[in-house]
Length: 543
Image 1 (spheres, rainbow, N blue to C red):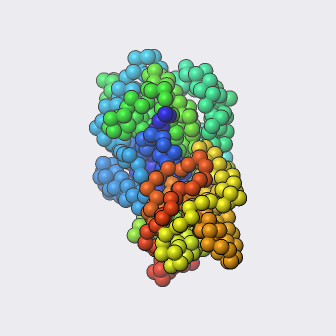
Image 2: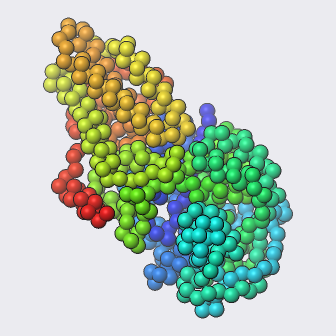
Image 3: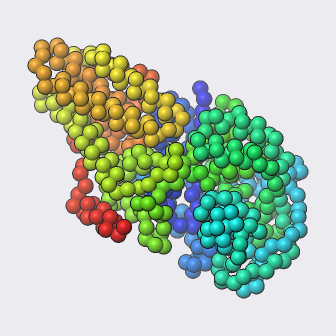
């Protein structure tokens, strides 16, 4: 049986996650992980916080904290948000762990001994005001590719282009705003060009199963000549994994060198590092599209450099999620951040999980709109799914004392639902979660139409028994399809139905026996309370 390592791109700990951060990596990975388990696949779900680098140093300076203090505070806040979202990871690690430093340095030394690094002395920006060389995120300026003023030293926030420091126009120090000068310094570079042929071969072989944007980004890089990339940094507080060489004792490793190794570290802590070398284990990675280069080229290149080839069988990358037509911005108070939702302030976690996956930006950028959230909550979860469950369960409880006497399925219903179930499985196998959710909605719609007709007609007792049994079985398959997306409510529905089997079958079949009895009935999805509605209205009024 195939096993799977499922990773969610490690979120930066320098700030708190907004909905766009959550939708592409952790939430998508969690839904896929739950689905895989329900299909009988053994998985290990890895995530945690990415803590090292200039981003944390800059944020710590602004907050008047040390980098360690900032990371301790924000890592706990991140975990609180993901726990509220019911993210069921096997480990939530931190790249500041001692074990991570050990493993990162061992991989570095293996690549170093294998001859994949080259030393270069070159000019780097030096800020006389701060008296230090400026690493990537300490340099801001204008992108030479798209003209955005939101470019930093390694990537443009405007167009997502991967930039060299010299490609920043009108650079300035992000700390003191002064214009830096260039001075000579030594750094180590990873010769990506040495592994390009192998990477091109792997991309060609594996990318067929990736999401469209992951294929596009990786194939774009496949057609470019890879050049050596600097993997050492001069940081203000040396907040990173120290370079394990005497001549580089004052430098740390580039954050994108150490961060993906976190997946290996956290798997190692779970006692399953051997999964990274065993051929029957698939690697499935979830992220936003701006992380595809690092997961399809840079990190796999590192693994080739230390003779550990574990290439991703699946890269499920999403486009960007915007907020009411604009970018999320904490400083401008624009958008929903994870901390805004804690305590069910604007609805339960299930409602947010469902809507975010329903609007998951799989084939292009998607926009979060409050009117669509209300539609997901009221029209689909409460009216379509919730009312169907309540109508059928209440009927069985009140008319039949909760007991079925004719556990048999309507053949036409079986055929119709099997068609949709097969589509659901095909979509979920490829992590096309948005499309899979439409299958759930379709089955619920079919269930409502079936019940509306079946319960209205006067038929004999045996035929009515078949219809009621069919309706109950429709609820069973809805509960199973729904569970990976909204686990709490999906589990509650299956518990009411007294279904212990938490697997998703290949076919829609009879799961009940003569004398089957349902449990206590209660509402799965409640309308927003007055306080929740008011909180939502407050956000809507601030648009």
